[in-house]
Length: 253
Length: 360
Image 1 (tube, rainbow over the protein chains, first blue to last red):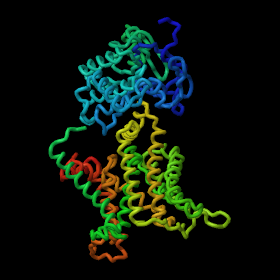
Image 2: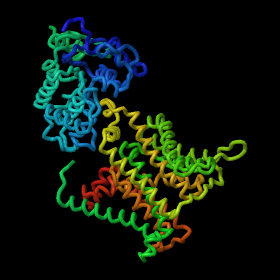
Image 3: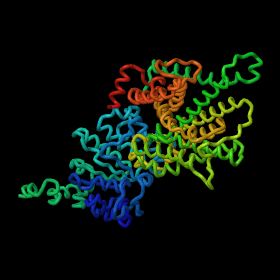
Image 4: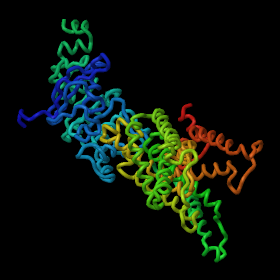
């Protein structure tokens, strides 16, 4: 692949304001096809708002978002999904009255142009995806019977079932213990291995270092630093933003 | 589907057999009024009076099933569906009375107009959720009834005004039989549509909207289009019932084409039977209409309610319906079909669990 090929996802000066507060303020970055990129940042840095702008659940005030070179800024969520961007929610939003399989099937019934299929085909695709995320054995369970880590898996399964080219994961590891994080990491790697580009928001540093090839640090709505995870996490500004100025000085000396 | 046990299967079979007997009797009894049956000395199982009550019940089967599509499956508590009944009634009524159209040509326009109106008001209304949607849709239902009664042109009421609209009597042999079976056809259509919706991609999209609209949208469900389509579909079926009603009843006015109490009744029927199911609203309509007619004192089997005069009975009926609504919502939130269908057993533990889950 030559360098001249336009990036899969391109953000240019994306800005989203809530009243006087700019939750996301002039954010620009690119994600190449097949990459796996992590967005980190302290609470309130604007990570989820940024994801909402990309997936269309919130309208951006300024800037542009391009998918494969064409603008998707301000279009409705179902059209973003159809173009091939899948997402999960930090606070899981399962369809409570459905079984695990039915939940995944909704993604396969609608979703991207590669998913959209009839009811029988959708259930077959749902089973495939449940296998991939490790929920196959619980396919017939009602959602209410799932543990928290399993609900996070289901959230990913539904998004993967839409057959996205780009997957946005909003803190799928939050609230998991160490063993569960390892399992979830394997799941993210497995999904990425199917050829999906992944952009993930995470608080857990181990995740960023473990799977991401590139990390973007957000702070107060701005991009603070970006690059290889190990390098970015040693950046003084990043340490300051996370741990405060005093701690950063002590660390240096 | 959660695995079913033997006892659940027995319950379900008993329920299906009971339903088939009721439906079979209701569909065959009217035939005994035909001359052929009378000359063969078959006892008369359905007189004029029977037809009136049975047609009313079936009309509510249509309306409750239609409400189920928007209220039960999509989860938008429409409180003004009577507007579509009224539109259907007045569309057919006006075409027959004023434009002199034949009934069977005027009837198909009732669902078309009702659905168009629903699509039009659905676009702004369905942006509202929860109580806001319920109140707004109720407002539409009330306003439309008032409009129909009060619109004048050149000093003369357009839609018959306060004195109502009279239709010519439809010339057909066995009128009662004809309208009963026509209404049954509409009910069969409503149930078939529900059955199809629950198995289709469309229906899965609607259920996803009910369970979590934002999640449905990011998975690719065009939520606005789906909600409007569900609303219009419910309106079309309700309008069809209204269209049949106008020619059957021969006279329509604000009181019988836009009765506010129908709004509550169709919801209560769907809740009582079980929202989101194929046969729940139909079962609820049958149970509740029989109860309403019984309390109103218009069934052949009647019971004197102590301390209540016959004039006060319809009022007492409303009070009892209100109490029933509370009991159903609190104790049987998933409806009667849930235990008749064998998914759960009606027991004290079930009622207690429901009470806990309703979290008053």
